[in-house]
Length: 457
Image (cartoon, rainbow, N blue to C red):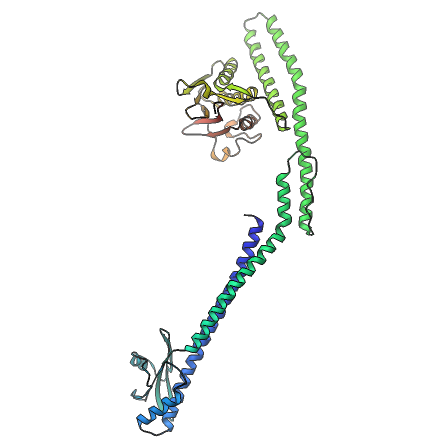
């Protein structure tokens, strides 16, 4: 996720969450206050009514009418019941709100439990035990707080509206802040994305009044300068070394040829031929490195239509000269393939070196002096070559480093090499828009699979 969106998300989400918590807390406090205030009014109404009953002596009908007239505007939708010490009803308001559980409430009230409050749907119910003029009384009030709920509803609507407005405002503010804060970083990222290693020009500075961004920009320029220096040195070093080695190797090869022609000893001839083959292989590696350095410096490379199976047979022939006891088994799939499906557009020297490395690894790491090469051309526009040998496999932990420079796995102990062959092979394959992967299907089988797009496509 981009840093701009992270700032927008974190700031807006935190602000909205905090405001929603505050709004909910305010609503809850007001709701509790409404309930407490209304229940207190119910209690006061019960006590006031009882005092009125005890102080005025009238018959029951006239008393009831007088009380209802007095309290007609006190609390709306209220049912009020008052009982004497024997729990006999001495007063009941005239409205029709039922209290079917009054008996249960009366049984719960006593000198120790003088106050009961509960909810009955939208109604608040209050039951109290109290004394007046040395007499005990019980009062039950059930009423609907229409005014309180109306205020609570208004408060809820106001808070919802305020929350929506706040969410929109805080989102816009967060977006503006995120854009302002992340603009230098976005610009720096964009310029880094367009920068190509090997350019001598420093990275253009990002306009900013922030110390961290200025410091980061300076450090990036310093780092890029060092990388460019190392890159230039590495590129030139490979080129120079390759050029310097070509001449002595050519001389060595011609000398070996001359010695071979002058020597008639049948015991020495095979050894000289092996030396010539190894020298030619070394010359091929140097030429490959020189070609790779040219490609990395931005120069193109020559491509022709190359039959992969012919390249593989040439590599096998060279290796059999050095290791006559080793057997390569080549299999086609299908058994009689279309020749066009075996050809790719490639640089023959580079591809030859890549397969030379893979087949040479089979010779080095096989435990039975045998390897398989399966050439699969069954898929349209795809050519797969699997190079397989039996031997110690590469562990899962080591496979992630298999194609990195100078890496040598556990199976490389006491083996000659520098850990560069597979890295070079992978680079060659990828230069030709192909892919190289390793897997071990079962037991002790090692498989390197190369996939190319065929020239037929």
